[in-house]
Length: 114
Image (cartoon, rainbow, N blue to C red; front, side, top):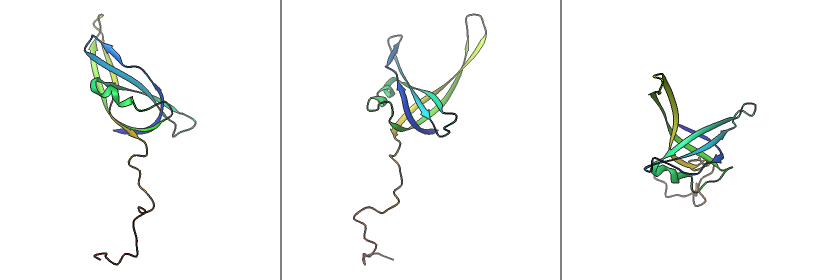
């Protein structure tokens, strides 16, 4: 899955139980001005560094997996958790299509094979 938006907030890397690292960030999806969405993503382990080159306000495209798990709490009750686990981040315009040809393209070039 993927989504495009602006970085609202980036949290520091957290180390959990000395061997697991996690970093969260908030993406603002304001495609609907009346109901903006603040979506929390997580990066884990080696993916934590993906946010190092970004700052709040940057427009990015986030590729992520939707994950869910079941947990039995100490009272014996089932509890369910969902997470949005980001695995790739790129500037929002990285794959943008251009409306005009590259500057060195010449439509009058007679070497065309057709």
